[in-house]
Length: 287
Image (cartoon, rainbow, N blue to C red; front, side, top):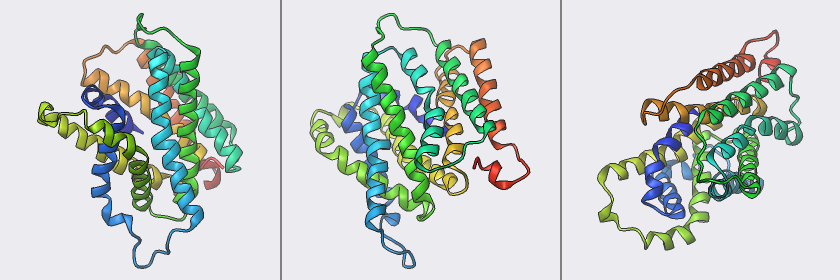
């Protein structure tokens, strides 16, 4: 989640150079080449079943494709501060979906951790200056909330797949579905891009974005889900907007306010509450 937050901040210049679907298509295409060795099954690994193929498609559809559409469309219609406050619901939605769809029992301490994480993200967004030119819209907020639900479904579906398949294999197939979904519009939008007008450093940004988003982040996330519950993992989504803020402060030179400091305290409290050992391993994993 920290890696995702970092590339969200650093990839911002690319959105001014590439249309959205063209950028997504290039991301998946570059990663597809890197993930080619994991695309086909190993000699001892059983072939993918139809339910697994369906789950891989749904995870990519919600977590890669639909999430991007809802988020970009929502941000166009609402202020950044409002969108950030809605995104602060992500740990809560993940915990609720985990209980409803995976039948995971949510401990009281985990619920407090979720609320602390949400409070930290909300404070980070409140610390950002409001943009007077961006009028808040209920439709934009609803679209951002839909994006939050899509990301939560990505987490829950990933929990089921992580028990059966290796993280790199899941990463490869999720990426392939993302490539297929973005290819029709992405290839068309690529005709509007002039590669010679793009500086070399931005191509390096694109490679970093592709490898971080489609390879490293997914592999790390799926590896973690093999060892902990989805509800427990949802607490750590707090790191996404917090790391974005950290990059903005340290790399882009934005100011750090006292609200940021309180938000970081809330985030650390959430992680400690969720991860602190208890008497039984099951309770430590959030079951």
